[in-house]
Length: 154
Image 1 (cartoon, helix red, strand yellow):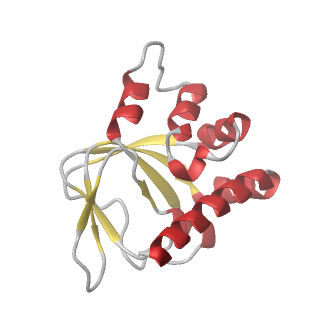
Image 2: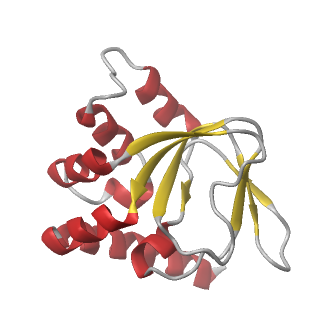
């Protein structure tokens, strides 16, 4: 996802960081949440909190339980997987969606390259929301299926 649309939303006129409607618009630019309706995105946004991570302080560690999903709002992170080259992700990147959905261990460690700000959605509230709002689960499943198809065709 390009950084410009998300950054524009964050800097846009009338945006308030404590307003769930603002975060709803940010989530609309994140592919994982783009297919769900605005009402459902508002519910996801109401669970979210801003977190700041210092340079080198891990967002997540490989093997640990997945307790939250992070959307990078500012900064760059390095994704480190065992036996693979590290790759960098920036604004709009999603970290932790698999562990958030299945409760399994993290598949990678993610470390900030400089200060990073995330919109963080806790797993416990998110799973409760998925049970109450199956449309959210369907929208996310559709996006994950698109990703699998794209990876399979590569």
